[in-house]
Image (cartoon, rainbow, N blue to C red; front, side, top):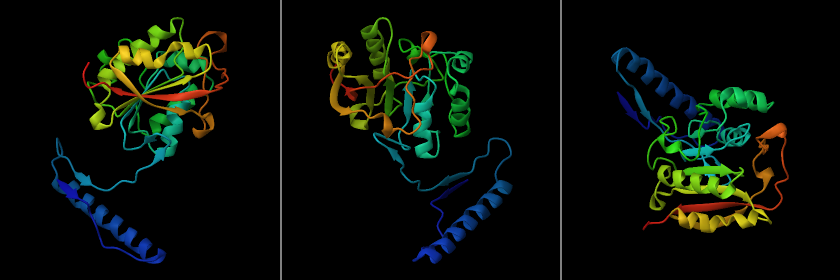
Length: 250
């Protein structure tokens, strides 16, 4: 049973607007109460189409379907969710298990619980090389943004290329606004990773490089993620968000 754009008029001035907001809410509440009595108990659905406000934090909005890869204590995902007032558009993932997150990061459990209260499901055990085969991550070309913050491993370039290869499958085409974001240090020796070249080898074009500032994401605490100092942050220094899109011919 659908109700498209329920509306009860406009108000001008603050007091009138408050009155009309109450009228809108009363209208929707009345519809829901009536529809509940009329719709089938099993399989019945009530649909309300309604305008929603676009909320933004830097390059990201609540209207984008966002996959986050390699999260530490999930504080970056939570920073976005708090800015949006919801996490329903986010799919935060980690290579770690739930137990490992709770052991390694003092705020890991609390951050995950808040994300879940805000409407998303955190996915554990996600390997960048094989994440396209994990059903809980999703299918082909479904994400507007795929993000990997400060990728780091023993074989750095292999890690990034594996991520790029998988992300290319999961992200939408350029004409539909799909982008792959890698946040990375830009000074030596990190500059030797040659992200632009790695992207080209995986069918991606580097379209922008934007300076990354940690304080743009309130609450985000970058983590080392491994070893005896997993919960420690590291100096971000000079870093950028490298923004890639799919090459049309590849």
